[in-house]
Image (cartoon, rainbow, N blue to C red):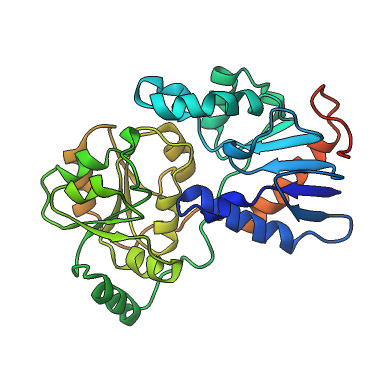
Length: 316
């Protein structure tokens, strides 16, 4: 089987980029015998085309297409995502042409059925995993990274993209909530983030530093009120750091009893629970990127056999 893989999203510094990079590496590791992975967003002479992000979905795919749908937030919350909603309109039309969808949780699968009308039998739930680079760091390494970024000895941590305000992430509300411990925000940020009160911004950091920042945190706070998966909590647990999150279906599905949950919107409760968190943290879910890749190859095989109107057997 020959699969075209759109790897352009690998440049993204957010969760989508991590997904593309980690999955590509894991897929290539098990691409043996009759499996071949070709990096391109213009599929030709392949059996399956995989767009691991919505931006790569094709309106007229020349072969069976698989699309990874990380969430459907712009469709579920149109009033908050007017600008991006317009951009996504054609993309969602393209997603409907897919032979199969890959989604990270049953919660997203349900959203795809409800908001896109996509058949449930053509959706595969394949969770994400923490990168192998994100593991508990030794104390000297933690101290070194703290000093380099000017991070205090004890702190609460949030990790994600801060280029533009995202209403569902609730970062501004978190920053405005009184707390005893400093709040460190990790991720590439725009000018708006510099106006948040009483926070420490690190900007984008490489994985080797991120592992140390996760390890040194008192707890990870995850205040989102809508998520498709929630990768930072899994990464934090992989580094031995406790997680406190708001009650969101997808995050609860992923973490189960591995995190402390508070009611969505209860920022004071979130901060209080995070400051009261203790170690050891529970182990992260056992799922690995090798597992993700194996399940994804199975999805390719199912897609290649699909005889839908938008999926000729082989691209020319």
